[in-house]
Structures are given as structure tokens and as C-alpha cells.
Length: 478
Image (tube, rainbow, N blue to C red):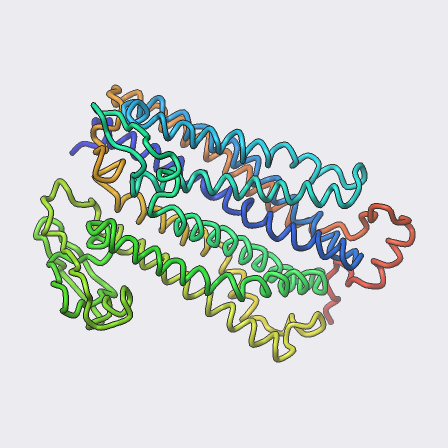
């Protein structure tokens, strides 16, 4: 198939590209907003100016990500009317209202209070400012909720039926609370928070390695570690629960995730492929390295499954997910990163308990700090891999079992789709370079520890900061 002359393929590439790029930015805003609530709350409780300066410094990166997220997200909504008009006509009564809720309830709440959070420090009461920060965080995560409601409904449509090619809602709450919704939202919520924590930790480790603000950033590293102790294992558990749902509701996706071609009957042991080279034409794996009975223990914690694991051969080729190798390895990248981050959290916690993370000696943990720096992109990679599994594994359906992707796409000339894809690629490239430039500029400059504390005398604050913080300078070398 010539992709450049196939409208459906080009439309899918365009939506996938915009989704993958856009997802980078709200991941950090939704997760970092929780961190901002924590540090600002600590400032209000303890009156320690360090927490105030943490809130001011990290909110700059929040604002940058928010702006890029807004700019990159707009083309996604337009594509439902341009590239996917038949889909919008079929499910628009439900999908349109959900996306409307996301815009009017979530995005507007976040955007409305963002100005107070960023520029209201000296203008409103500290408690009012804190409430604004909470509203920003609530709006950001409410946006995640509504988006996951919509996508989960695509995975497990419920609450109505198709009548003459149009989905008619009979139970709105059943459609919202579809079988995938709760675990999907929790999995994404924890993913955004975990990714943000490890990004904050990576930036903190970078400063410490470069002998800059060691006391300041050792504190942020400990704060995010105290949260990650609970979040990282919880993410693994929710991920397992999501896998169980795929086993129950989307057996074709599970078969692709495991590169399982033959059906494993109930009561028999199922192996788990660590490495495989799927051959879709021959309907087999050219290479397998597997753990005997491993899949049974993953799904039901026992060697023999109570239900069969259907193989891909149970369905005709046109009803199977494409690109089995992509789905297979994307899942393993996601899961592998999840366990790696748990390991890094445990290693760091051990060093903390041993007293190795104090401001005066944390710089000695060079391998630990370097590992934290290298962990910065891993959360993003895990999230993008997970969404590849989620959406590519749903194929050939846009609405699982109801509307095929080929029927959901608009009938456009391929050249027009290719042109819009090219324009979006250029614009997103400019946005990415701009984000990297301004983000690195914020990080290189570092926190301003001389910012006056709201309601405090400026000279007192400066004197306090000069005593309680290590200057932003490198030691002289002999």
C-alpha cells in the first residue's frame, strides 16, 4: 500500500503525530500542579521561604508547558471535523459533549486561575493564592479525566446503541462510567504525576551535580521522593489491573501485546514472551524467548488460567490489530520503565535512610544523581508507548467493535491531508525548539532566592536567604 496516496493512513499518521507531540506538555502540567500544591502548602504551614521559592521557580516551567500544550492541542480537536467527519457524525452526540465538558469545565478553570497563580503573589491574600493554585491543579487533572472518559468509551463503548449508523445514548452515566474509565483515568493520573516527579528530580539532580543550590534542590529531591514512594508502586498495580481489563474486554489487543498466535485453552499454562519477532504473514513468531507459565502468573497469579487466552489466529487478518511487533515492544518498554522507576525510587530511599542525601554530602552520590538525570525522559517514553499500545491495539476499530477506522475517516484527497500534515510538522518543530530553548534558559538561570516573600520586609528576607542557602556558584579549583 502506498501511504502517500492513502487518505486513511495519512489521517491516522497526522492524528497520531499531533497526539504524541501534544501529550508531552500536559503530562508535566497535570503532574507538576500537584507538586506546586505541596510546596505552596508547606510554605503556608511552615513560613519557610525555601518552599515559597520552590513554588516560584517550578511554576515557570509549568507556565511554559501550559502554553505549548494549548498551542499543540488545538489541531487535534479540528481534526474531528476535517479528517474524521463520519466518526463525528456517528458519535458526536456523546463525544461532542464530553470534549465540551473538557473545554468549558476543565480547561477554562485551569486557564482562569492560572493568572492569579502566576502573577498574584503580591496582589491577593496568600490563602486566596493557594486556592487559585488548587483550582489550577484541579482543572488540569479534570481535563485528564474527561479526555480519558472519551478515549475509554472508544475502547469499551457502552450506555447506548448504534441506530442507523448513529450512536444513540440511552444512559449517559453508563457511557461515562464505561468499563475502562476508572482504571484508565487512574493509570494516566499516576503516569502524569510520576513523570513530573522524576522530571523535577532529574532537574534537581542536575543542579546538585553542578554544585548549584545544593541545599535548595536536595529539598526538592526529598519532597518528590516522599511522594514517589507511594506513586511508583501504585502505578505498577494500576497498570496490572488495566492489563486484566484488556484480557477481559479486548482479547485481540492482548493477543497482539503478547504476540500470541495460537489459543491457550482454559486450564492450561500460558508462556510469557520476553522477546519475540512476530511474522504477520506467516502467522507465527520467527524468534521467541519466553518464561514458561509466565502469562498465567501475570494475569491471574497462577500457572493455569481459568479462561482461555485467544490467539491472533482466532480472527481473520482484517480483524486483527496491525503492527504486532510495535504493540508487543511498546508494551514492554512501558512496563520496563515502570519497574525501573520503582527500582530508582527504592535505591534513593535507601540512601536517604542511610543519611546520604543531606545537603552537605548528597553531591557524593554521583551515580545515583546521574541515574536521576537520565530518568527525565523515561516517563514520557512510557506514556507514549502506553498510548501506542492502547490506540494501535484497538485497531482496526475506532470505536471498538462498532465503527471501523476505514469507515470513520473523511473522504479527502490524499494531497490535502499530506499538506496539512506537513504544515503541522513544521509548526510543531518550531514549537518544540522554542520550548527547549526557553525551558533550558529557565533551568540555566535557576531559582531567584532573593525574591521578596509576600508580606515580609525585603531586607529581612534577603538577610535570611543569604544565611540559609548556599550561593549559586561553583567552588574554586586548586
